[in-house]
Length: 123
Image (cartoon, rainbow, N blue to C red; front, side, top):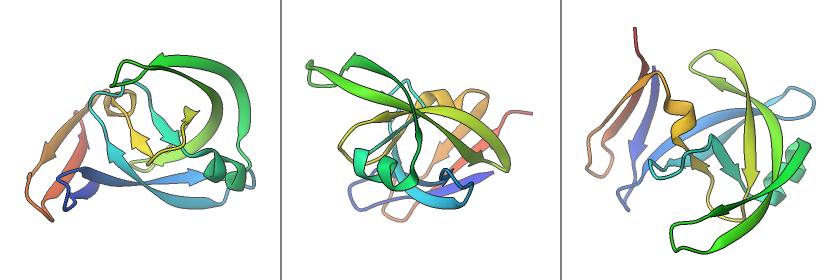
């Protein structure tokens, strides 16, 4: 089970262990965004620090209706004890955790400051 918490802005926050190019894990605090269909976004500066592998360039329509261009990188994360290779979108914002990582999982959140967020694999 993956455990997170609800912050003062009522955002669901999860710590995601991301491997750098030398396979060392770094915990990245990401906001769970149910409107984001991808896996994970990270700021370009963090991607550079982790020395992640560039894959391609893409575009997407964001919540305000604007189209943005961004680079896509590959990375390995530790998702509930399982190493997973995922695509990361380089977006200069707070890291976002998207719905692609939640496929096959249940999500529970107590929406109160400090409330528990639980992500559990469906059995």
